[in-house]
Amino acid sequence: MKTSQGKELSGKFISENGSFVKFKMTNSSTVSSIPFGSVVHIKNSKGDIIFTGEGGKKLEELQYALILKRELVVNSSVSKQEQQDVLKLKSGGNYKGEYIKIESADVLFKPGGSYGSQRIKIDEIKMLKLSDGTEVIKNGRVKRKENETITIKPGDKIMVEYDKISKSVTGLFHGFDNGEITIQTAHVQGQKPVYTNVPVNSVANIIVLPMKSAGYIPSLTASCGIIMFAVSSLDGFDSEVGYVMAGLGAITGALGGFVLNDIALKGSRYTLVGKDAWYIYNQDIK
Image 1: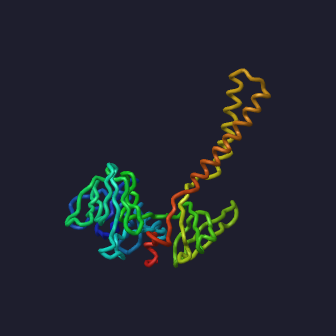
Image 2: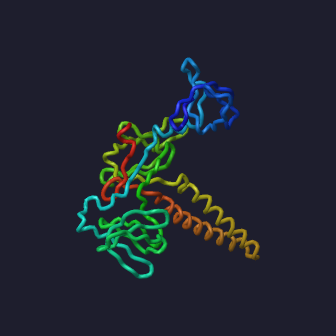
Image 3: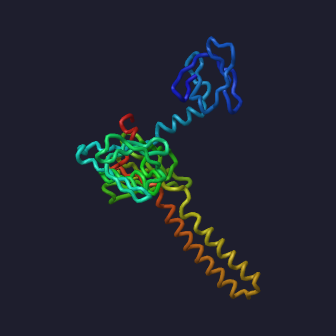
């Protein structure tokens, strides 16, 4: 048996019940119940795969996933004399010095001229900005973690901006291989899907979009129209007034839908160029 943690266990496969695998390990007198999610696969003595668990499906997904990462680099290219991170407290105090790190709900900050760092509650900080302009904390909330990872899986809806943002392509992420991002841009029923490959070295931004977009606007428009017509009937208006109100309701619904859709289409943006950029973590292992 191979587990999702990378371990290989020898023994005897007993059974499975849809949620757990019954497996008796070598030199063990008891039968272990192992969740599907922890099992990649089980092979027989001949090397044939006789069972594939959820762990195997997740592993297969990650083989084609796009993993983005970024780390917070603190004053790496700045001399000790120029290290002037800025910390402002909600109470009014302003300090220049050196940001050390975040520990639990506190920030360790060394003010200029001080021999040691001070511990300050995050919710007491109005703003903490590094000397390179990176804003770590704003209004008591952490904006920039030290290590961040995002995994884009096949089927996620994305927009890729490339060639210095002069071009873009939107569709379903299909996979990442050989230094290229593959996006399914069209799929008409009965026809083969259309794919676009974008070299990662030309990508400027990757925007992860919600799966639902403008498709819900017609239903929102119709719903508002029906509601307005029903209200007019209840209030005793004649049919002509009802149709007018229904039309106004439809227009209102359409405008509201477009506004909500515009907000939704902004998605989550990950920039791969410039300061504090994300990078493709699994690029070198493909």
